[in-house]
Image (cartoon, rainbow, N blue to C red; front, side):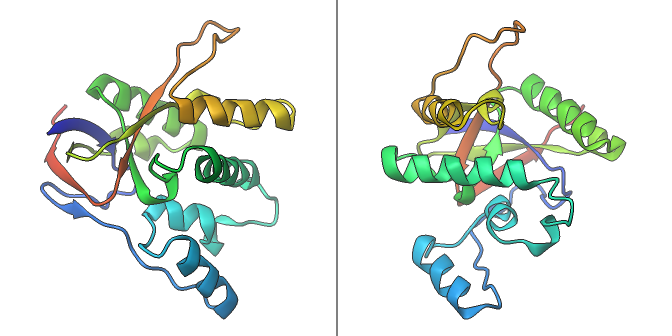
Length: 186
């Protein structure tokens, strides 16, 4: 059984708990039917937030790029990498504690939320196949063809040589259900 580490930025996890897919029913019947058709097993919390959560949509469209990149990734996965786990049905993790701490710092800086700097980290135990993809590929910089190429690289488990000298940031997609282990003490 493999062990990974996940950040609990929502403070919703606890030790030795099974994280499962959930069913969400949009109020519009046509959306509910379509969601059930494309994800009959349910969604992760991330999947719900990225596919449907109306609270994430604001008038200024600040999150539109992230939501569209998520959709592009899902469409590329469905068409070219159907054996890979859906980001909408997975838990995100890192292989090393140091990596998840680095991610926590990046997320706190991106959101301007110092509370995230103290968000708990949990072990995650998993027996199922996971996907390892370079999170740095997930942005909307450049033309559509480059975004498409980076989505393909992500699902291929490959990366780029970054002009600024950055290394890839590998995230692990763990298909749900998955189980938390102990809370990491720092």
